[in-house]
Length: 146
Image (tube, rainbow, N blue to C red; front, side):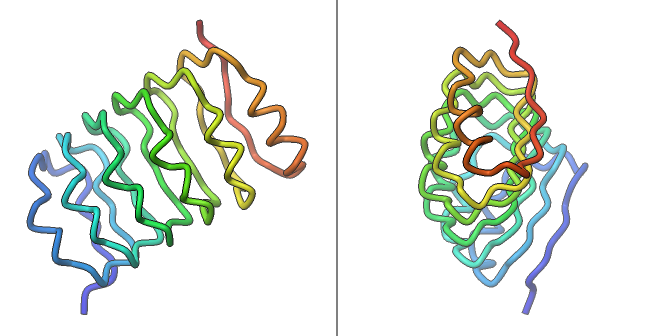
């Protein structure tokens, strides 16, 4: 059975055929033309998901991917990360170059080791300061652009 699949840089826009690959633990879809992540909603075993460099706005379909430890969403068009709130196993989270203003959700990620969030119009960095106190060895890549 297929557990890892790497399809980056292929100009893919429709990922519907991936919906039945429920045994996947790692999936790379970087640098494609993906907008709709709905077909990924049933990939409940997935631990590493790479979706950077697409045209994703809505990440609500990722809400139930509770096994995720690594999630790359950089260089998309995301402005709301609240759907990630329950993904408390995350260790690596890449959100750089999006449209994210409110980052309070990151305070839920007590297992984080790497957070890349630069290039977003972040309004308040207080959540990052709090997270830094809770996780002193957190590797941060942040830059406030207003």
